[in-house]
Amino acid sequence: MSFYFFDCKGSDCYGKKTIRTEKDILGGEKYNTIKESYDNEAFMKQRKYCLLGLLIILLVLSGCVVNKDRNGEDATEECNSEITTDIEEMDEEALVAGRYYEYCKNGEMYQSELLSIETPLDFHITLNKDGTYEWYDCILSSYMGMGQYTVDNGILTMTEKEYVIEGRKSVMKDPDPEKGGMTFVNHFRIDGDKLIYISEGSTNFLYVRLQDGDVFNAAEPVNNMEVDPREAGLTMEVMADTVTPAGCKMNLSNNGKQSYKYVPAVLFFKIKEDGTWYDLANIGPFEESEEQVLEGNTEKIIEVKWDKAYGKFEPGEYRIIMSMYYYRNEGGSVTVEVTDDFTIK
Image (cartoon, rainbow, N blue to C red; front, side, top):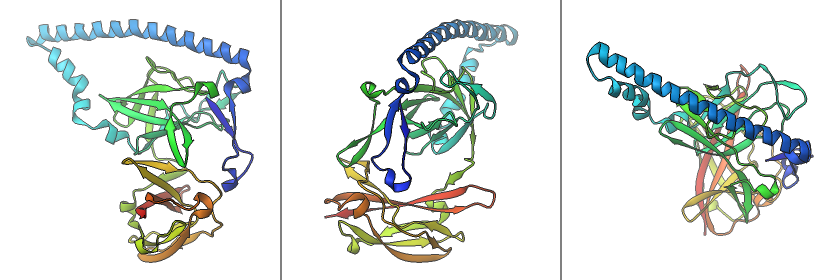
């Protein structure tokens, strides 16, 4: 596990983050003591919940037998049907993708074994539509967990990853233990708009140690909300005949009533290799640029340059991404990511 501390602001931060591990912060002896206590706690929990699970199974089977005796029919199939009906009738991955979840105990005071003071709980999880996630469990920490999730038979599994720069690509890989990396793997049962924590087989999180059955509720992010560009009526089209290795012209279109702001120089890119899209790592700060406005029911042609932040592009397939946004009267913002693909020959 690594903590990231930034001694800079804005685009100047690129390449200037300092990495420190838990052992650096806590000291080796305290870290090993806490880790050992966590491992012992996990073992005791696993044994306890195995016994509890066996008891529940016996009770469920007993209930089925009672139903059969009382109703004169076999109730075993009915019990299994009740357990699997939701899993068979809904696509859980589609249900959770793109959603934001808040811990049901947020706001309560919590004493973490990694901190010397109590802090109010502020734990949330974001499951992105591309199969990645982020989580944040402590208001005093600069660490944000990230990784990839899968859904199998109603169980959500979150596996921690970290971004590694390979050439120009930013690739998600397993954390490197030799550099202080620790892989978190956590499981949740999907129950409609809720995620219910499963402690068995889970490593738990950093500052907050969840209990079996703890609930995360789907919610709307307080600070911002992402909207599909089709719902917003926003499109961005690269003008193919203007593309150079250093920039291009694009046509922005707003078919809705809401005005959106954007900064032309703040652009993100993906590169396609062997049929897979990878994030493209920048090599410098963005160009200086003023915030612009795209009014409702209007179109605008803009020219963008990316060579300062990304260098000149080699021949290949690329995807350009720009964020457009507006601020809500009730607080927070709404963000729309508009994209388009282009080729440099």
